[in-house]
Length: 247
Image (tube, rainbow, N blue to C red):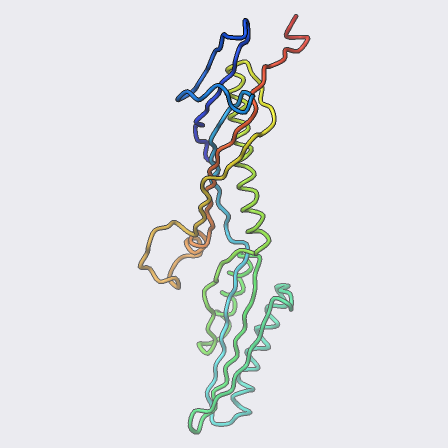
């Protein structure tokens, strides 16, 4: 999501005739005409963007409680084998599956718990597999709601890209303003980032538990938003007419 914000622009230039005459052009408010010996144009720019999550985790828990330790293990193992085979059928990589097992004694009974953590990059596949497991297995298997997040590489690229686009916006505004003054934009003199805000979701509090939210709402809540504001100063140079323009 990108938004166009009007720039606050300052520009000044001098016209030398007898060494004393000086002309100043300013937008919004005047600024001193002598600035480090050159004419300058100052603009402000904003870039707003959002990044949906590109990863999600699903936690699957299998439990059984029996008097015999072999029976309790076999009971859970059958379900575990079925789930792992289902994940393999959907081409989930082995490296994206983690399995943890725990055996506890509760008085005269044994409780065996297996936790499967699955990483997905395809949200549709995540939804299909979760529904399949819930449909085929009994209540001894619990499928958690997807936990959405961003890969670190994609998040870092998003942050850099948003700042770069803000700089491009500033230069584009400077070019447009300079054209109105029959001037051209030279090298950048100074670029200062004045604001860099990042937040997750809609910034609105909600009392709805995460486990009852729709898939779309959970995606929205995990979306990263970013707003970058900056000020930039460029050289302002007299525009040289081309041969065609002179004709």
